[in-house]
Amino acid sequence: MPNIPITESIVVNKVAWRILPLVTACYMGAYIDRQNIAFAKLQMMTDLHVSETVFASAASLFFIGYMIFEIPSNILLHKFGASKWIARIGISWGIITILLAFTSSALMFYILRFFLGAAEAGLYPGIIYYLSLWFPSQHRVRMMGYFTLASSVGNMLSGPICGWLLSQNGWASLSGWQIIFLVTGIFPIILAILVFFFLPERPEKQKFLNPEEKNWLIDTLEAEREKVVHNTPQNTNTLTACRQLSRMMIEANCTAARKVDFSLS
Image (cartoon, rainbow, N blue to C red; front, side):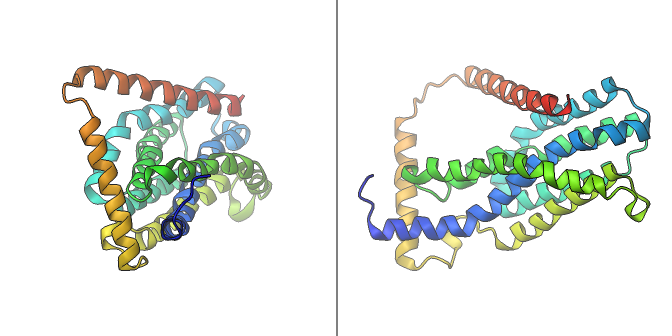
């Protein structure tokens, strides 16, 4: 273990306790949202009279929307700020998930699944970018590890939660699959409100750090950015970089889609 100065340790812990609970809860909610369709499948197919092909196609449309809007979403996060844009993501994905509870046809199912992916696009890479604005490189990987652990927690909790919601079949004259979408849609809206009011933007404007702690964090992050800029080749081929990025996005979304396909089977 490196010998970390006490001031550095205090600052990193303060920042972690301030921002990690919120962003981790958002990512956990996203994974529960991706799993809810698997638990709703049997009742939903029976009520809507749709085939396995229709259901699987609708499930996959989520990732098409996600992939198309992933980069634009992150550009807008950089422009408007993390708290506003992540809150927008949570509210829009929550509303669309609630609308899924009232799906009445295959076409409506297709459209809502596509727009659900578009609404949620950029959440994971956006939060990774946001964490880089707060944590020096020495601590960044550890904090990202804590954050991504939310995916495992979300997968673990989705079964008991969705199973219990399915058992409430008939409540308020709703089917179990409708209750799943309603509850898992309300959750991100609540998180979005908390994010909007409590998730801090850049360190420069925050008051939960004293001046000494704030100056240390700002100076450290700025020194790291300057080092990265200095070591980045200036003759990078933009077309090649775009091709590599596109390939990485396709591979990442195909991997995520395989996980959902496994859940649906």
